[in-house]
Length: 133
Image 1 (cartoon, one colour):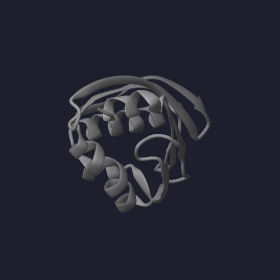
Image 2 (cartoon, helix red, strand yellow):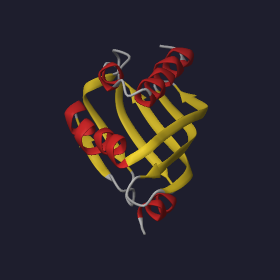
Image 3 (cartoon, helix red, strand yellow):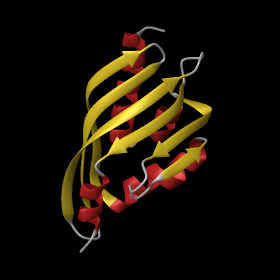
């Protein structure tokens, strides 16, 4: 695959998650995907498989936050590896506090053109500050 194809796939995933279309989002992921939220992030850890990711990351983001977004801004490519720089934002429902934080997402694709792994790097302090009274 070419970098434009990888970018198109990843752009689609950000749009689908933003619209709450998780079933369509999961079509772009390998069945045995590994998904790592950074240490210190509220949902930090490594999750394996779509159901694990759904329960431990996306369902929580969708229920604990108002308008949690991940805006992809810039892409860097190295064969089947893609890094995306972007911005998170949202309001934590329990505290009604808003935050913005930079992120880098690191994706690896498999031979079938599916996302095989995901790794997040972000300023988790800003997220945690929004979550505390």
